[in-house]
Image (cartoon, rainbow, N blue to C red; front, top):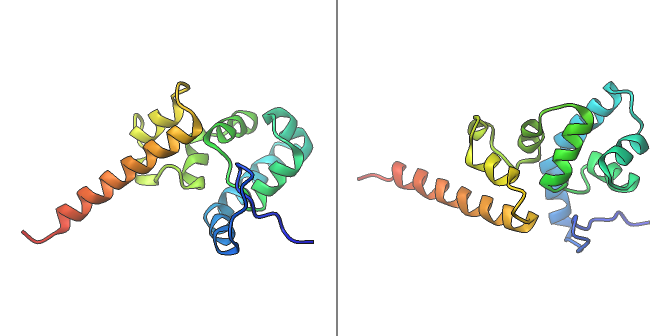
Length: 140
């Protein structure tokens, strides 16, 4: 049976993209599993607390799915860990930008935005930072 390599939206992704997702969040899945085991929770118990399906949580732990910021917040609450730590491990927030009051965290915490809007804003913000960094390094 082939592995399910669809995104959290249910849309299929290419094998290359599926590997990229697994590679980028592999450490997130490992960390979540460590925290779950340390809390003496089964996969099913944690899934129930978070409000996601058991197979979906298993796929996150194995690096096959990338959870939304909302799911990461629920996981952080259930495991009693920092949501910011999960955002960093998921690649949503960069460690150097993880200071209190960062723009990324404000965007992720805004309940008035949809997940898609949050990701769009984060992409735009990251592109502005990259552009400014490139301009600062350019010879004058």
